[in-house]
Length: 441
Image (cartoon, rainbow, N blue to C red; front, side, top):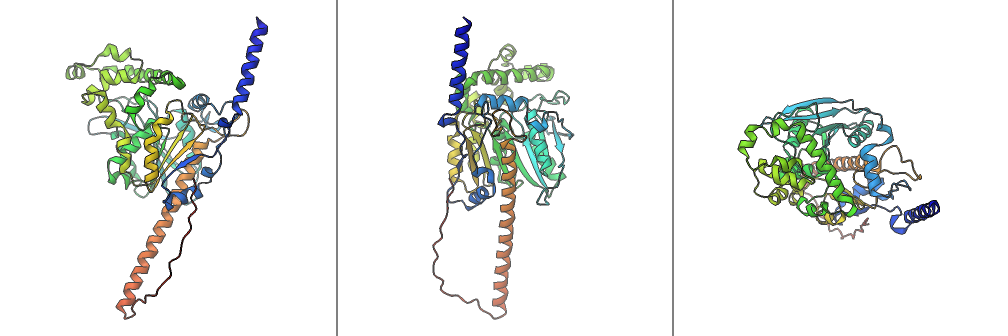
């Protein structure tokens, strides 16, 4: 018996080692989707060196999306494993009585540009500034000279009590809008970057796509590992492929825990009388978020059907309105967001002048550990470096554009002044010059 077990284990290990070295598992350059005629995006790619280098993950576990997802969600990066948030918690009151809280982390170093840059961070579902992966990113950002404001989703942080009978939703932007208003009032001259992880990516994209006025408040937007279309993702999350049903069960369990902790307010007598169709038994016996949305969320938000609710909360119908620089990041081995959900963002990136979609072969869901060793990853994740480099590249290009605009205005003013002084602007025939453009794909 033991002989058979050892032989089976040996065969499995050999197969596993072989699979790690297969062609489809080897490190590759990130796939970049963008408008081929966009000079802005090409300049960003040239300046963000990380986009022109292969993403290399640890050999023994980094090429598995599940391991990547578990590792980053539980451990974070090596530098932040024992690091606790050292920020300041702020609270603001919304018009409906809800208390929105967020944590503020000031930079530990001066940014290389000498400027003031602030990340407005929207975490994933049921997450907050206390989540490990958020702490990992915040620490690296502080060391790079960025200020971070991290939104705490309603009801998630136990020490922040609910003051209104509602929780966060997949694409609800009210809390992020309150955070943005506070930051703009507190730091009117800062360069703001909207950054969303997973569900937070959907939130910030919805916020930016709702109004051009919202976009004018930001330097750029960055979305990481979101699914874009909740309606399309619903049946996929109920499948056992890539263990998605298991992930959905865990997300639902966390959501039920939050609802149970705030049960007195969420299911008060007044709420139950106002929405008699709420089924408490179905809510707390739910095994998927669809069950909770069917028997609670759609009712308190006033939707007739779950489909209507999902359609309204998805950023796929709003991203076409965004004209500021946008970075979308996804991994092909993400166990929660399958590749089929990326069609809409690929189309948007290939038709928008300032959008860039980066798709890696490995990385999992919010993982993106990197390192050329067998086991130990680098202290800082690939994702943290990408966000910092992209932001710096956009900042540099914006400065160049502003300088070009200023010089153009000055040149036009000089031309007008010359003509007023009696020196007409001479026009000469200039032969057309054919420009060659190098497209990076």
